[in-house]
Length: 174
Length: 165
Image (cartoon, rainbow over all chains, first blue to last red; front, side):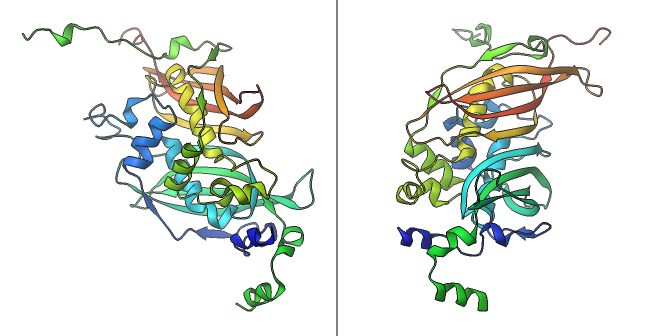
């Protein structure tokens, strides 16, 4: 089983997150046919503004298909997921989810994160809870969505034992 | 005029508007959705969420799950999706959500259903043709267990323009 724990990174345990820490996530993603047109229908979103190219023509929201806000939110969380939840035990929730500008097919999302809070988990000592603030921005640098996210993350003190000691030392030198 | 005259065909309207949302009204949303392993794999990869808890079943089993954990964002998107016709299909823009809580994991093969209750409905001060409605929505699995709940707020179009307009 120990090899399974080598599948995830070792620099993103609960102890590695500090309040105020900021991250720009290195990979951005363009939203297009699969991400919005298909997933909107996959998740049963019947609002045709998300998958009918003609319905919004000439509207103040802009021509073309409007990206379902929670797909922009899911992409923002996804782009942030390796750096924030690779060693997570579970997603606990979201707060203050806001969609501030329309997103259309062809727009590219970049995710930014700040650590708002870290806390003990009330019912277990092998993990802690981190509250992240995430922003999703478009290719013009405009914020299109923001949200807070609570994640239950493994403590290195408990789970990090699965990592060979030499590997840990190497990383600490870096 | 061509035959048949398609412009004369009445639209089959789906959805509700501001006047349909008195505070306290409850909706049991349509259809339900069984989440398959394929749904989770497609959603998680397409949204760049390559976490092994969602995509490596051996890894998930080593964490006491019977299979991969369905990406909670897919659970949330699906519960919102099931509620769209009743709540927001002909309404207006999605403004935000509060207090989204994931209460228990969902695994492939689980079936989600959604229901909502109107928490608040008020006039928009700046947009006379619209109101602002907040709903509390719950998603349950096939055992009747709560898997997610949240509050969602949208701008919602009114049926009738205000007097003098």
